[in-house]
Image (cartoon, rainbow, N blue to C red; front, side):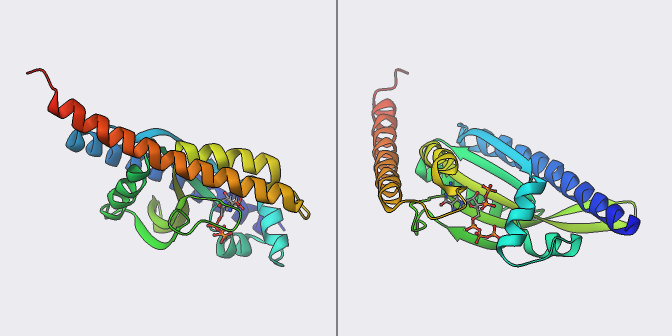
Length: 209
Ligand code: 0O2
């Protein structure tokens, strides 16, 4: 028993260390991006270590026992970072930026922007490994990076409260309306991108030298 508790503690320490490593590395990449492109594409970043009750729910829903081994093997988002961008095109620029980083190894990706979930959920997910250096050597620790626009984040955050976490069948009418809201959000994202591109061209053409 004491051994198990210690290994959960060790696992959590690894996740905390991976979160710090990833936050630092992403901070460096974003500064570099801003320097090269002369603008900052990120509205804000959120990060967290998954809460114990969410871990239990995820493993139980998938029929796994609550063990340290199962957490490590089946919960891929113990370390979660969410990068919220201004515009749709920024999401893919951030993905390119992360792909270019040798310290971050991408091992799975889900583009729920080009293929949204049936709920309407849109976001770009990367499952990555980051190296964490301990006294006895280096360990590759898994983390999930979600990249989405402000508008997608607005929808997902409210959906999280309205229906996503509900432990039962959500009424069809609510599902359909949430889906319609997701379409509206998608439409707004495209409109804002066009307005931004037009304004940039206008600014370039009318710059006072
Ligand atoms: P929480 O509380 O947000 O952390 P995996 O997690 O990779 O083992 P899965 O389900 O294939 O399994 O992962 P996927 O599809 O990449 O999505 C996982 C996360 O995306 C969820 O984590 C949510 O954060 C988010 N997500 C997915 N679908 C929806 C949706 O319909 N609505 C909202 N609001 N968020 C969604 P968790 O652990 O389920 O929840």
